[in-house]
Length: 435
Image 1 (cartoon, rainbow, N blue to C red):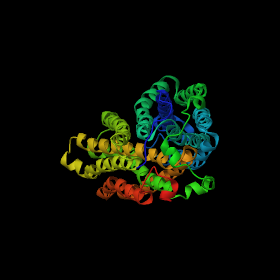
Image 2 (image 1 turned 45 degrees about the vertical axis):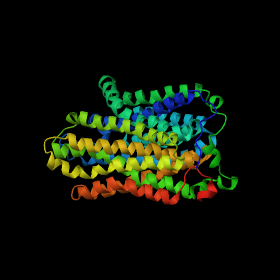
Image 3 (image 1 turned 135 degrees about the vertical axis):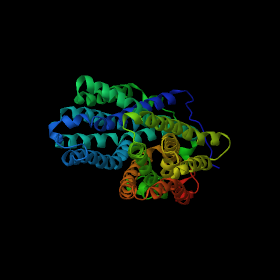
Image 4 (image 1 turned 90 degrees about the vertical axis):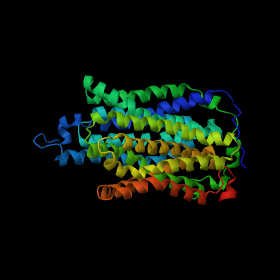
């Protein structure tokens, strides 16, 4: 059984680091969401191509421009994940994270200067490249500061910033836009990133970091000949994480993108009326992120090995997702009550976040901190690819075959876990034991 050990530095500074990661993740998601939140205001921006003579369902020029801006960000984010992970591993967590948030903070504020659609393209590409560094750096930090039994909880805590931003960003962006205009919304969120950068640079990360790796990190140390970029990515461990991300990330984005549409088409709710239903899903997601991440640590402290604790927690989350398959029937069973369907979405979203917290933590169970960011970046890129594929399937089948889509969403986590187990039967073991 692989042992679990606490870092030699037993102070609570690691939770200060976790809080900084939470703030960075919150800012990360706020910066990327501003463009979508100001969409109604962009109707009045001439270069976006809104036609005031047509109704909102017949705006081909605007819809094409808006969609292309989103696509440019998504492509840049996917490419950035492949690059940023290796950069963070090469430069170290502190320097790599600082560069990432400096790039995305400045890119966010640069949106306020655009005067054309092409300007938005350039700003979104820079934003995507910078924002891609957040998760590789944050996961690397947790592997450096937290032992295996706490890593899932730490990941769940900082990852909940993604959900917290969904509660804060709409209020902040709406307030700033109403008072100062849409350009200042980008300045507001971008300047928050600059504020975080100051705190990060002032924090003596290297000096206060635990002086010794956990026993798990010593177990999974890579020999010199296997520390190259391609050598790392050609291991079964890297593919286990990447396929876990590739199969499940698209489901998470499906929940977020299609829940408003589901509430509108099945219950006739406009966006304002959807608020508390959406907030419920985001709040449950945060709880799931924290509880699901903590579950593996609880099991490890009760005597489970790293391998068993992590996989039992992921299995529990995968099982909790399954009830989402009943969503297509909720509209007919509860024709005037959106809450049962919302509850199914909330449970599935919470379970996904708990799954994600543990999935991210497996990188520290399988790789030394010197390779974690590279693997996280690779997995993130596969997640982006999987998300695009799943979105294409949803686009063609959701209206005609909703049961198929929700069945896929409800069962793919079990498939991902089986594949991961076949590739890496025992996490937290020396490389030669599983390669």
